[in-house]
Length: 465
Image 1: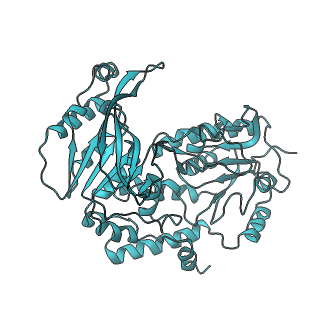
Image 2 (image 1 turned 90 degrees about the vertical axis):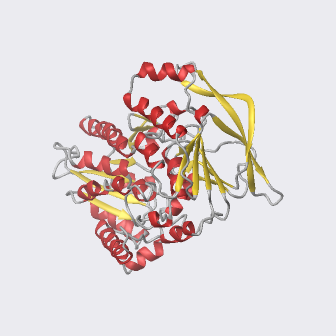
Image 3 (image 1 turned 135 degrees about the horizontal axis):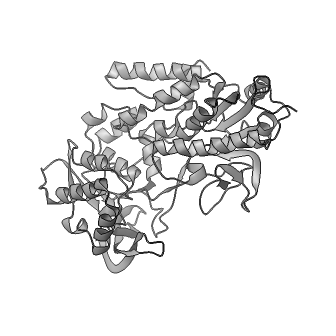
């Protein structure tokens, strides 16, 4: 049997997912000079771009411009997109093995890690993922309800997602009207009675994951004062030593910015956003009706762990914080894929350099992973590019070494025929462009960048399906 990757025998690749990790994998594969590749990308929703569409905050429009790169990738010869197709429902692993030499999973990390504290499941305690997906118009979350009639909200976590949630809660309606936030979320947030948002970080300012640009942005909101406690941004001896040892100007600037905000006087804006450090929730407190009314915080101190990093350690000092709505943003984890090994503790597909393995470390020929389902929820959108490059390098080496399974039916028409039998309402990339045009036109009518279609039914109806 001839080796795949030639004009007469193209390498057939299936990519599951359509976010950054998926598109970067497609870019590396389709741009490989020595291989002829036919790549089919499968997405559960009718719309592509995953995290960029449903995870990036509406007021960070410039970050979303990366989709222009993905549009160019989708125009390359050999690329096909099949939206509204769910792996495990419309296509099984057995199906993919029958039609493709290689399968790359790029499904991200779709659920949140738990805090594992008493009261976590009380009413008005939510994951940040739910709220982010809701205000970004994700079809699975559009009908969620968040009680924005309360006055004080806590956001647990100090990463980018936590900061996004806090910032969106503090934006004015006029600020939000300039974004592509979902219409129903815009309406709900315009009626919000939230007046105070508190972000809770378990570590200190020198360990905060957000960037300097994000810190500055918190201090530039039209309708909210940004507050930091002076005593919580005064570095402890271990942090001072770590900052000096690293010698990173950006980190030194971050600490300087935070200390500057701590010294600034409030400007009496309608809302207040307070950033706390070195505190962790140990319990959520409920009322008689099972709703959150507060939380118990323990104050932390930093210590040097066995690996040399600075980590928080609980003291015997606690405090009570009155809050009526909680968003938990303490990390993400992947979701198991039907028929694919999954490491429950780490929340990823086990792999070695992108090659999927059994839990015992045995390679599974023809199966690969890229992005957060491969490495866990770390990094930013751009981090997925070198991650995908590593996976594709493994895929290409396996082709060169003859270590890929040979599918029984590699003809692209056979895969498409099976798919259209299982899911007649498949959405192509050309049809996505039609949906894109509809959203842009709806936005133009309202003076906004776009107004999203937020249900699968209305997306398919717009396409006459």
